[in-house]
Length: 403
Image (cartoon, rainbow, N blue to C red; front, side):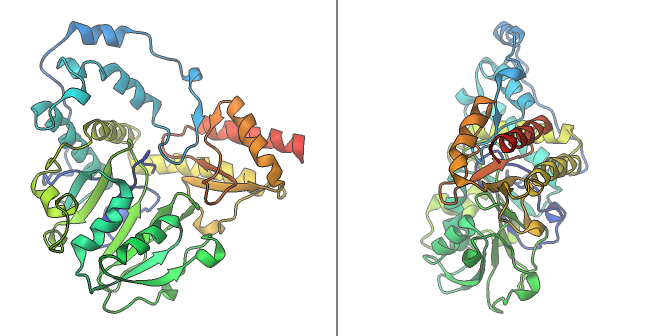
């Protein structure tokens, strides 16, 4: 699951679609190509060759022991294989004589990159052809404005379930462009739970239901999705590829009804009509996302990746729960995130020392979000099992020395 950074927003009309069967994975976007999902992922290369590229690829690559285990929530760790491939192609992309960072976004080279990224993403998530995939910029925070501006009129009612910081920000931003109704909030319990769907009193006239599928700060995650009364679910899903890329997946018949004062860069129709190329997109970020998608497919797709993620999360949560209270995870067990694991120490005065000692052991970014405190270990798709095992071994050693 783990978009390795920029937040993503999913806009859905039918929450039972194949790519939502397992909310443990986050999503992304590309352009409307009506791709055949049964075809094999396409490959791309430049016809030209270059001696310089050969020289770059022949250089010795850094060894994995030189790298730290990065537990940051975002920007976050990327697959080592992806980084090494990007390194080999940085100076001269596949013999074209230029870097991806130098390409025209309207040239044939970059068009092949963005088209393959979309093709692979559609294959990964089994995205139907009646959905647009849009590669955008501005992060989820921008989408908090774009969603109501594109989907509803200023006086329309929309329902929000607030399970953490991100859904709370979305609710507050929606007040500028619609009439949001807060039908459930976990704030009083410090965002450690997700409501029972049967307890949600949705407004019968609400135009959509908004949720954040995985709250990266508080570590709560939907294991299934609620069914909105009118059939329209907006799911904010986080972390996949490279920072700076936001992906919107949206039903085509929802596009084209933006409020009249919607800024051009927030109008989904503009981006859909221009295949995400209305202005210069985050080209290198899209390229990196494409490499991540390719890597996930090579691992066997999301089903196989989920098995690995479940194993990593089980090892870490078992270590926390089995520490006799030295470590504590505040989140209700049934909704604990597979990706973002917050925990505290029984002796809070030891937390700074925990972070300091872990860094010496090449495990970084374990300090919790500034609004929550404590620790947080983000174990996205790219975090290897060895990283989690090393963290757990360190936690047990630290406990033995400080309990």
